[in-house]
Image (cartoon, rainbow, N blue to C red; front, side):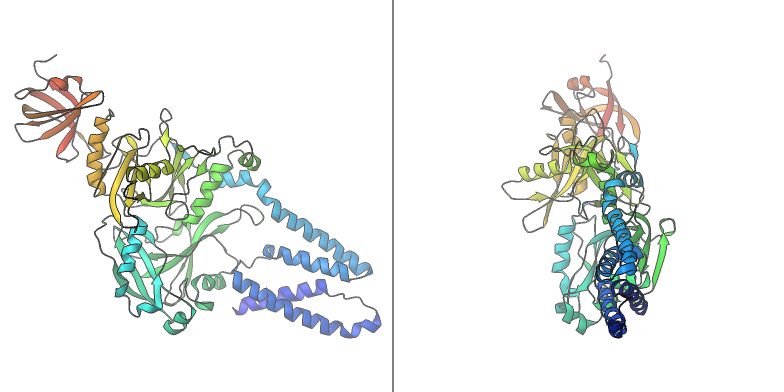
Length: 555
């Protein structure tokens, strides 16, 4: 704080010399010293309060409005040569201000280059033996509020920002306990800890963890963690909110992404993350290549959201984003954190998911989707199968709402997965009170194919059958290996669905299989006591999906 005050005084002195006339007639020079001192004191106070309240970076480029004001006043008040000099400085300040304000018109290409993504067609198939992190944040937040009685001196506090991360190889939601107001902070001084809850098991109950924190987002003055970070790193360019990260020992850390402007003071490119110990106030900075292993979200969701905007809007420059809109892709706003949704891959790495749609109103067709690594900021844009027209996240939510229109249930956190080779939306369904009711899966290319279940894995099993009923081929997951079997039919069941028939059968060894006549047309002739050779996907499920079927004696 002391350095900020000294900086404010230095800037105030310079501004005073620009404003107060230094060359005056002899009879008017008596008051010049008093005018200089008084003006400098007032400006120092105003500048200090500006920096303290706004928490803006302490770079000289942030002072361009003051430069215009000071040189303008100085040129107006001064006379003769001094007026000429300050007039030139005023014109220079105006030119610099124009450069700052107009940067958005000319740096669109640089913004796009900073956010450029590698391109692929489709993500890898999801391993159906795993459980996606699919507990919606609103539901988790509701459960944490109901468990708030675990917090000591409950009336002092409220639940803070909810976010997902991996702790000790488990996917969990984290939410700090925050002060509920200024006077509660005065009395409480420190917050008592944070809540955790599973992000994959909706039946899990929130657990409160003791961890006193002095520097928090809800603290005031120099104990506010964002202001404390600014005082420690006055010139650093931050972007996004403070986020709580828990290490594997359960110790809390507040983090914030930092980086640089694209040009002038416009645009942002992330380069690292600052970490604050909320107990001691110690601050450490790391480049993205040096981020500690316990930090999952080094790149904040706000940074990813703005990068998606650059990539989608500025493909052909700034003016095209407003008028022609050729190849423009609009990032979805259906994400759970700053228009993006954090998800984890099978290796446990966190990514931010976003789908892109057309700028044309009334169109719910998806143009592609992206996954951004939350630790490195590197992103991949997936075009999807160009032969199919994929429904975007908004369309998926509309289907959920129509499906449960009588119950007034709604979807939250739609995520696109590759289930059995089919691009599919997985959406948790909540009731009007925000409680989880089921999980809904719908094909992005064939919205008429959908199903729901009490758990993601139950919905996934039903979805496999729905795909076969709908005439789609099931390719299986990334971990399901092909296997072969032969034996005699013990039981058989056939169900006509649309243009095809779904055939379920059991062999005498007790194994069960399911196949569509689209995949194996001769399956329509299956009867008890037939001897068959089967090629199937070993998914570990009760009914194993068949890829090839041969009936002995039938050609």
